[in-house]
Image 1 (spheres, rainbow, N blue to C red):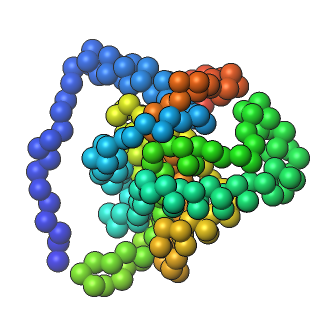
Image 2 (cartoon, rainbow, N blue to C red):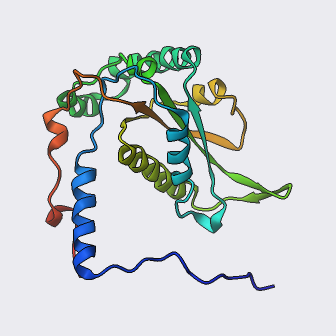
Length: 223
């Protein structure tokens, strides 16, 4: 049976002059997005986080199965648990498990095993990928899960930045502890990323190394 299709009614066509202006404005906005590691403990209302997660949920994905789940955490005790377990993993990483080349490449960023922002920032958002989705009680295989969740995570980071918040992507390996802490310890889901969210601390800095972005000719070919 053919699926129903509805007319596209919400597409907005701009003049080419407006298009280049909007593209330039967007580029200038995303250029101000930086990964920060010093967060203020200032509260961020939950409804802002909700709107950003809704934006992430609009991301393109395989077969529209939307193979993601977000856990937004503001509870201080849970954030403390996450910090404790993440730092234990990071200590092993920086002690040598990461390998000499990787650790050398991280030196310009000044990172280390201490992750106080996991407690200081008002929100942590754990992103989970799902192998299967449920539709009317029926389990369905998900497709292009890694790609779909990656796009949704990008949408989420952009939405948080656009709303006026600072972010940091955090990916301790392994991340299985997040499944237990977030109550999602099952064979269908796996932690994909942890996003730290809040206002930058007044003493927040950006590593100079992180400001060096590749040029258009380095990242793109036009055929």
